[in-house]
Length: 92
Ligand SMILES: [Zn+2]
Image 1 (cartoon, protein in one colour):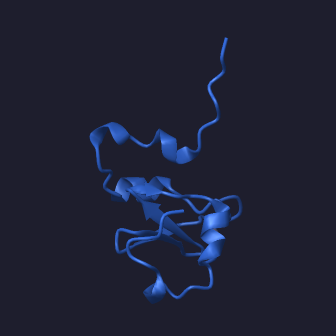
Image 2 (cartoon, rainbow, N blue to C red; image 1 turned 180 degrees about the horizontal axis):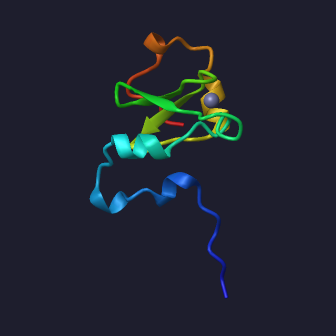
């Protein structure tokens, strides 16, 4: 018996449809992993390329239509003004 390795959240997104549109429905499901335990952690979509947490200002890049919802990634950009975020985001 081989157990399935633990997959990050993004692997559960429906990739079989090809390019994933970051829809409003998906936005409602995604939350900032830092804030969601205590607050709403609602995210704002920026230029189809970034998800920005309304609470803490962490910014999560969307690479190849996959939101990279990692704390380390979000913190990397926390001090970067929104207008200076690279579009498209750099590969991680
Ligand atoms: Zn947050």
